[in-house]
Length: 494
Image 1 (cartoon, helix red, strand yellow):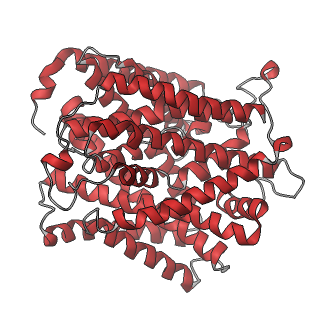
Image 2: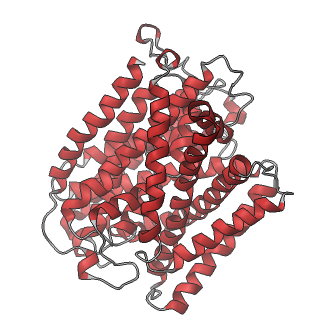
Image 3: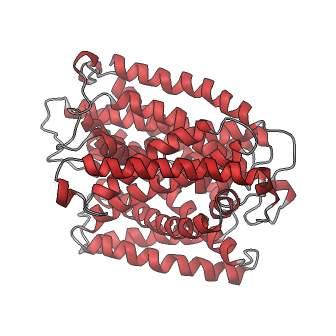
């Protein structure tokens, strides 16, 4: 229990102090924001601070900060310290600067900012990866809430043979279509306050249940701590833990949501609450579900990782702490998370494609054309994941990797933005280097990547060496690009 409490102190206290430090570096002022200067009634629409913050929270908090920590806690209580530290120093900082730099660039989406601060060649590669990620997010966040609705609410089998499964998927898909197409204040701005209430109730309820089970919350044994032994199924802490937890610490997907909301914020001084603090709340959600999973695994109830998958654990945890009636509200709260991330993921993809090919989004016909072009491949990915026995596992692994892989591009972009202004770009580059090492060593070793595992089995020696060399190249490119181009970068047209 002590380790969990320390983690909460790091998350809340550290978030307050470091959030203030990050804000002072950026120096928000009273200039007009894109929501005011570029109002178009569709995507550039000013909204109130509380509404922007709530939308940002619901956008970024999908099933990642729940399913990831449920699996990540199997590595032990060290997760209670790693999650808040990473959230404060990396995740929240990443989200804040992504949103704020976008505001300083008239609400530009990530690909345009990557081109401006890292060059056209990097943008070309980034475009491919980010579009893949957005489609994966859309598919994952139809699949997981759909299965929760069918299995835990309707109490029916979630198989592809059950027509109810496809009906529920179809209804979520229809909502995504509407939320992607219509102006942000007409759909998302109106339904999110309701969704937000459900989210808050479910998170607080599960947290309360955790607090009443202190005996099951194990502490870190620092005297005998060895990262070589803190493993899950023989997997090393680095990189597997960080790939597993994913969104609860750092998520590249969040940058696409921060740039989306940058178009509806009416004052730069609202940025800290809207971007940084909302990631701290996501960290709280991740900590809560990680702790709840630990309680379940350490209680004599027959629940083990071997016989209960991460998705099924959501229902198990909810019923254990809240009973059958209360569990319905908790499960609905969890269902809200992926749905409110999936809709804006596809909306972000629409903006990215429109921005890339200069397609006017005020025109309804052109907006519909881009929307349809997104939903067809997303539907095909969803169909594959559901009808193939190994489909969802493959989908989730690529989603988790790609999600963090694109974050290192945002970290590099942030570092360049700060370096050319003679500010502390290392606050972005150091966590960017760490995550570059994590994602590169993972994809080099993993069977879904370059499959170095076929050569070195469980050892990561060569994967680490190659990843280390590539990480140094990543750091060199970032610092050298900033030094070579300097403030002339700001003269580039978006």
